[in-house]
Length: 372
Ligand SMILES: [Zn+2]
Image: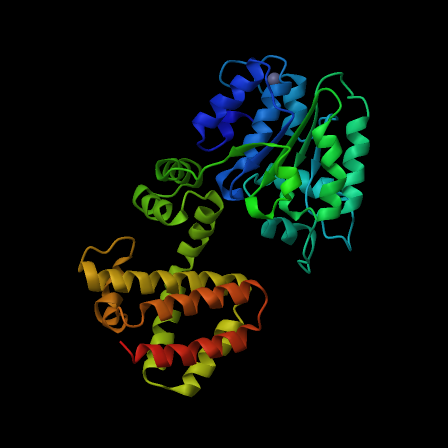
């Protein structure tokens, strides 16, 4: 992967390029930021630049044998550690072919997508103690080609204390020419002892302009829609992509939302039960998207009430709906609605029983909608 393939982060790219060219690479670095900001693609481009035999001022060459092996994730001196489902395999090595497939298809992915790829049952993956021993073993071997040996540790917060503590010594006193790049989304979840031994590099969110240009140029989204999606994606490319999927389902969501609000308003319990059952059958991921949509509709309703017709980011059909509906969402119940939908999203994400969750949701809406 070249720097040019990494969306945004021009300042960071320059900084990493300078580290290599001025030969002052810190041997243990922690890239900190949401997966959707692109820390992993940046790490891959950085390592490729470091290994490139014909590097340019701005980027690696992409054609030397190192670049070619790194771009297919096959260089013998570059190793990967990532969370695995322990019941299926304790070492990252056991999942190397899926890992390469994932990076090739889409290097912007999160833990959820990764687990979906390796385990039908989507069990919780971790980085276990055996993996730490493997890291130590490999880092103590001579490098194959006499240069750097690199370990890229993705989602370092998934290391438990016993696996993390095993690594402290090697991170503190690494063999010569070692480079550890740890990636994490969550500073608080990384072991403090690891934190204190690494140089922290904050991966910031992408700017709206960077997301817009990605959506237009790489995803074929039209400019107006791209602006809309970028505003809602919070600089997170994974979120932006899930919003594209959501856009496809937007009409369905609108219909379901209208149906939900109608039956709750009329206190039509039978219709509420039917709605809950039907939605529960749609599956976990579509349901989560629907709940995000509902949150957005509540937010837009309150905007409509307070700033009148300055509605942003809604389709013509939604505008028509909000004309009537927005009067039901006021300062008296907006926070109730927002917590309700975001709690439901949280619970469904953690595998709560959808039918029960949605039935509860209906009854709460029935109460809240009448306190407008
Ligand atoms: Zn090269």
